[in-house]
Length: 247
Ligand SMILES: C[S@@+](CC[C@H](N)C(=O)[O-])C[C@H]1O[C@@H](n2cnc3c(N)ncnc32)[C@H](O)[C@@H]1O
Image (cartoon, rainbow, N blue to C red; front, side, top):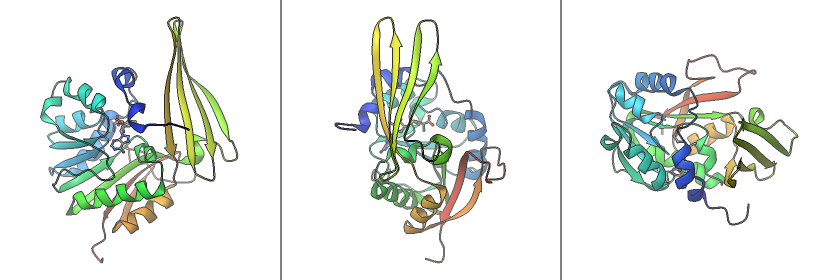
C-alpha cells in the first residue's frame, strides 16, 4: 500500500472511536495476565487506550506501556486510572522503558502491525530485553488461515451495518510478502472515511522461531484466554514465552 504510515492507522479519529465497540475479551485477558504476573510489574507493548492495561491494573498489577500513537495514549490518559500508567511513546520493536518486568505482553494481533520479518524479530528481541530472568512474554493473535481463507486473495466484510452508518472491512492478501493490506471504510450521510492498516500475518511456528532468535522458548500455548487446548480447530492462540536459561 503506497504511502502507508503506521502511525496514521491510529490517528485522532480512530483513537476517538476505538473503545466504542470493545472486543469483549478484556476481563478474561486481564485475569490470565494477572495470574502470570504474580504481583510483578508488567509492560504492555502497543498499549493503545488501555483496554487491557486498565483492567489488569485494577487487579493490582503495576502496568507500564509502549505505544506508537500519541492519540491512543491521549485516550488512555483521559480514562480513570489512565494517569497512573507510564507510557513511552515509540516503536515497540526498539523503544525501551529501561526497566525489567515479570510480564511483557502484546495482544490483539498487534505483532502483525510490524510489517517486515526483521521488525517482528526485533520486537521479540525487545521483549526479551525487558524481561526479568524469570519473566514471560505473552503474544495473542488470530491464526492467518482463520483471518483469510487459504488461497483467497481478498475479502470484503460488513463490519457494521446500521441505519446511519455502515463500516466495511476491505482487504487484499499477498502470500509472498504475507502482507494483508486492509482498509476500514466508514460510510455515513456526511461522507466516507478511510482507515487503512497493513498487517504481516505470521503463524505460531514463525513466532516460535522469532522467539528462539531472541533467546526465548515457548512454554505454553492456548487457544484463548480461558486456556482452552490449542488444536487443529483453533482460530487464535495465546502463546507464553520465557527466556531460554540454557543460552
Ligand atoms: C489493535 S490496537 C491494540 C491496542 C491495545 N493493545 C488493545 O488491546 O486494545 C493496536 C495498537 O498498536 C499500536 N502500534 C502499532 N504499531 C506499533 C509499534 N510499532 N509500536 C508500538 N505501538 C504500535 C497502535 O498505535 C495501536 O494503539
